Length: 477
Image (cartoon, rainbow, N blue to C red; front, side, top):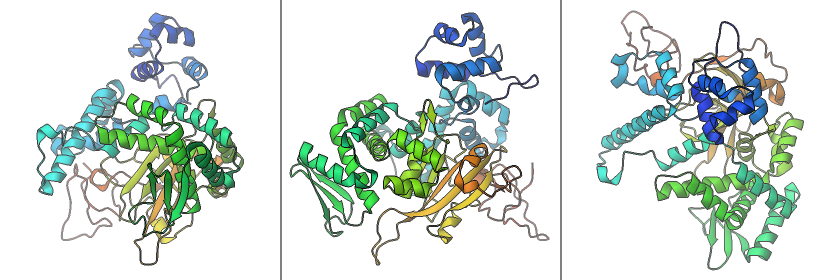
């Protein structure tokens, strides 16, 4: 919970207003729920009165609210995003102080998000120009984010939790009544009896460029032999989700108001993936298993017959009011450091315009395939996180085929670490923390031996007389 002391007053007007609008209640109604007068609540929203501890407690009780969500904002347009953007060379002469950045992000989140979108469009245009690609303005090439960026941001604005999909998954799972290890058999039977669909596992040369294909006319679902058992179960759950809850998926996709058809299609697929995971791992049972096993992912994975990655992803969605789990964040990276998946049930300063810091051991986990490694990291704002990392293989890789190995990084705030089996035996009171930062171009940590570039808002200080630890030493101011 946020601490309210005499020397540190909390002014949360913009966040209270945003919360009220998300809940769809009036100032008068929220004032009644909090036991204050409408005029006093109006002063709170206008930052003319600080929020007291009593009001915070009533907020938590009235709306089953995680108070951490008031002290930081995981959505797009956050102070972290703006700080990253304003460190670009084109803004260097402005010298925008951090307190101004934080004020804009908090008081005008819509303006902050607009800046983020404009900067992303600028980057897209610059990259395409470097490649010699010329886009026409009327095609809207540069005025909106890519489909994957838009969908990722939309999911994060929902805190990576969709109550409607959870309810639909509970109903479908209850109707199937499968034992976790027998899900595939129950799903095959339902597809056959209710939908007239036969499932066939076919050789890799039949589906050389895909792992799943549904033939609508012949009523057949083809699964590639390279899919693992967990992958086949997920494919069956996905097909059931689309067939039995297609209208719900369409409604949710439309409700998000995606900017174009490709983005809407990607959003619907992402929502269907969420629903499929929730069917395989029903919320209540999964949440209980996570607590009972101290979040031992291998045990959880085995219990529900899913992959390590599927279990990790599901852990980031445990945000049901009254039954919340540890708020995890998750990334998936390849051996080159490219981030292909990024989700958070809590706040974490992901670098929006660059890769993850090389000092985070999610990268070094490639040296110990299949083994879970732990690390306590500290971000530039002084926040500490407990993390684990492990490599995964999405599909079976033929001997002569391309390597499909990826790395999964999971983490939570250090205060939750004692609930995790992976922290046993570690000194959490006086931990050894590894300092990490955002992308090298905007990271200002000095003397980093893994620095790949100098910060764009600092002056390089290379001379003939000294060889520094970092290949790119820079002035402190």
